[in-house]
Image 1 (tube, rainbow, N blue to C red):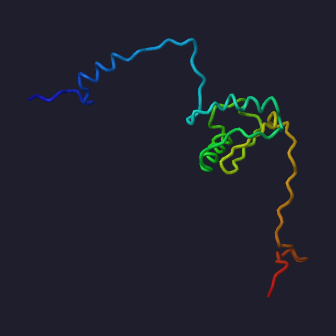
Image 2 (image 1 turned 60 degrees about the vertical axis):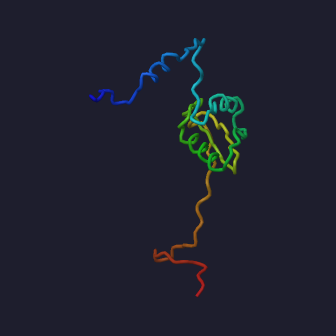
Length: 134
């Protein structure tokens, strides 16, 4: 029996089933959603209307999913409004919070305190440890 040149192992019945697929005409293309099916654009537009207000923007099944969503939003891996502006996202347990801070570069940054450590310079320039127990 000669071998078929069809390398995809498609049977005649499979082709007939594909031909019976019904197409549907729509008025407009649906909005692009993230892989999880969440419309981040719609949710985050409400934060733009209320800048500097923290809002819970999602509740997930597991803390890992909330953390993953927070990471994707922080890295701008999803469709969201005003991607270049200042945003902040926080995952706490299974909940996800977000805040829109405003236009990039126009947000006043709070000065961070200097890191504290237990090292001081001696008078001759060498570093010595303070509060050392012997």
